[in-house]
Amino acid sequence: MGMIPSSEPDNIGYQDGQAALHNTKAPPTHWRNVTFRRILYGYGISVFGDCFNGIAISLWVLQTTGSAKSMAAVQICNMAVSFLFGSVAGTVADRLDRRKLMLASDVFRGVMAVLIAVSLFGWHAPFPVVLLLLSLSMFSSLFQAPAFHASVASMVGREHIQQATGSIHMVDNLARISGLAAAGVAVAAFGGFVAILITGATFLLSAVCVLMAGRFPEVQRSVSQQTTFAQEWRSSFAYIYRNPLIRSIVLLNVADFIFHVGDDAGSSDGGQGMGG
Picture 1: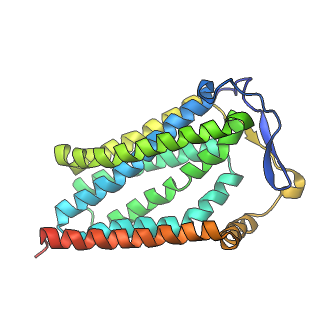
Picture 2: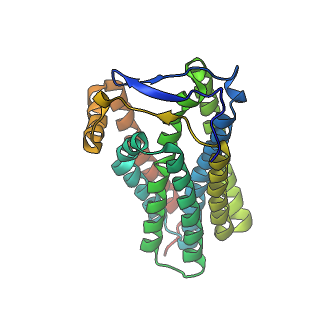
Picture 3: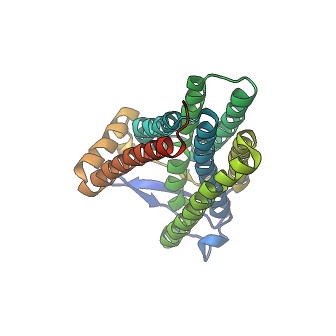
């Protein structure tokens, strides 16, 4: 799907277990790097869709069922899928074609959004079926970000990694804030069906950006660095266990999410008094 511009690094290798660029030539600024710029746009659109989808589904469930427990169930399913399969997604992103992985994630989530909309409003599927579809969509979303972040160094070169990281954080924050805000407006103005279809459109648009970016720089591994999937997966847990800072961040994120879900459920039950 297109060739890598001559200014892109050709590939990266692994020296002593660390990624290393074989060709560090890159455009004067990372914003002039067409591949990175288009992938960054797609990533921002995808993050917007994820945040939009989470709020839109939760609000629709709360408005339709009047049950904060059902809304909390959606959030708990998302947390459980992320917690159980997050490390697997990162390992997969290290071993497969990252561009294809991002495309598959975006297209699958787009199709799932349409299927969820039809299931809810056309087929009137039971709530457990909707939870299953949402969980599958969440599982697919886990592969998008690791594949993107792992490709940044090979796209922009060593000299632009810091600037590229700053741009990624800026786009990520803007996408999250706007996605959360837009979801509530869309559900109130257009209803749940249209809101979920908007989610599907964002994922498919993200896939278009990835397609337009062209082929990613290749990643090569030396023979000494060849490992099995199980070995890499176990090493990710070992790294978290050995690093106190990373371990603390992981535990804090889990605790914060649990308390957040509990607060949402309690405030919604007390504030609306629905379900009776």
